[in-house]
Image (cartoon, rainbow, N blue to C red; front, side, top):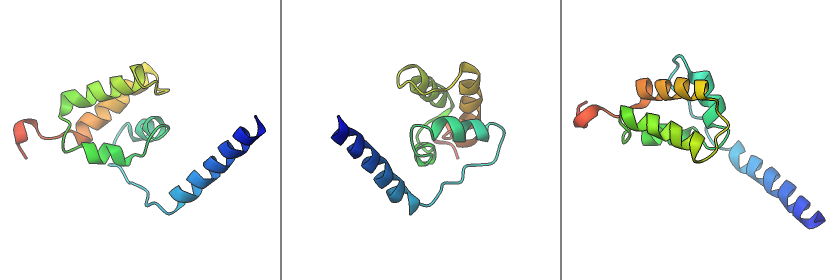
Length: 100
């Protein structure tokens, strides 16, 4: 049991060191940003939001947030999930039908 605890601590420290050199992503400043930063970054990098924005239209952001909460178990309340989905739809949704 003790070796597992030591490995767990070592892995945590190593992950912190690896992340220390990464450039922090700056999301668009808009209502709901605080909920996005707190809720989404608790499980993954905020880079995923920017990387997926060219591909996810408005309706799919809603589905993506729902999946993260209901399937993946993200610790986000229903009220915060609505705020997060609205922020993502308004700021990172891909143009409809390929329009720019």
